[in-house]
Image (tube, rainbow, N blue to C red; front, side, top):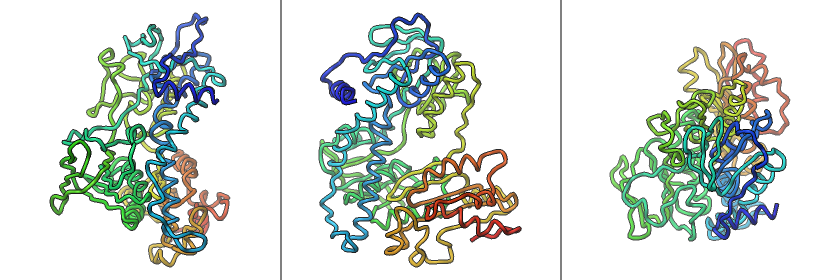
Length: 511
């Protein structure tokens, strides 16, 4: 594994330039699929083709498999969010129990970014090794490619023929197109990892969705004055727009209580500076404001990477440029599939992996469909925030009779109610009860089906994969079945025990 880490590091920083090839040159069979892009969609798809007896080739410009998630996106985000949680608790409990007085100068954004950069090749090394040795995947890495036609790809000075082409070239951060965007000190999630070489002192985050909220919470927890500027209400669009209103209020209120400044319904006019960023001019509902900053993070969405197959493939796209596919991941051209971020939201690992596997199974003759219109989701602030299904407001708009189970109950002050206290919030339960979290279960009273579950706290995220699966079965998932689960008490899933308290009622009542 150490050898793989060395190869990846030396290739990535330019000390070596050779192609990393794991291709069976003796094989005479044509490729059933070439996966252009070695992220999770390409890697999982190629593995499925191989498992079903086919031959696949993965080609990627980077010297590693795994794509941007472990390199610049979801893995550093989780590292930063864990730091945010730890620092939040250290600050809140400073001088109590065994917690020392909090030193606001002890934490460093740059130090944590450097830590990640120094160790990020490890997961890639494992994926390179696993793909070759355990999965039998053929690949060309450090090999920028160009599509010649729907059945031909050129890479590393050779042309490779295939029966099917699977495009998985991913996405990149969307630019704002405003004055000052090219100043030093303006970053997106990727360039933050690649280019940060100083300690930020004052930060502005542009955007109001998951990236903005997660990174904004991290920056503020590190002690850096931070302002989020959002064109609409924070966490009100995209997947977070499905979050229950009370959960959103709990999350956003908690961010503000931690001195994270949030300007909603506001627009950035320009980023100000000479050669480096010095501030941001913003139009708010109360008028124009100038925000001083030496660091700006742009979290305003993404755009597809299409350069490697434009203009060779004339593919149908949506108005934002995402490649249009059906539920079998087929594009408008026969034999050409698109997977992962290239087909647009949701930008989630499950969609990337499953879309690659779906394309592969269809290529190998197994009709498979993927529907990502409804899925569980999560984000981090200083909390782990998870949701699945309908919020209370959406449920009441669609259903005749809705009841909810809410913790803490709406009738009680959260300052006096140490619930939902569990792993990660036990100390808060006995010191600052209002910080233990929030959860709500939304139930259709007529069918008794659970139609939504929402949680802020710690340790419940993994349960949402299974709960969502149960909720979306044709027969649904009732409050009675929820109450019959065996919780591992004390657990963050308070809705199990509370469902048991109510499930014996013929006419359900909330609590």
